[in-house]
Length: 98
Image (cartoon, rainbow, N blue to C red; front, side):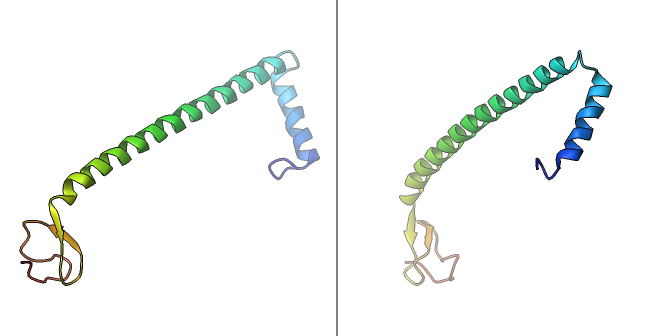
């Protein structure tokens, strides 16, 4: 079974294809289909590599931003939430910050 189809269904598809395209054009059709599948796979691999590089750069940027903002934040004494260094009240619990 291929894709949930049995032998009779695949045979009917093969016969219809043979009637529509003829025996002389089937090798050309198979070759074109193979080239299409190959180019799709290559495109997917390139897309995966580009996506991985994009994720790496975003993680790197987020890491550098996190290091920069950690110096500008402090912890709330009541709930421990991270708040801006110049904030007067905790946005999480509402406690006054010293």
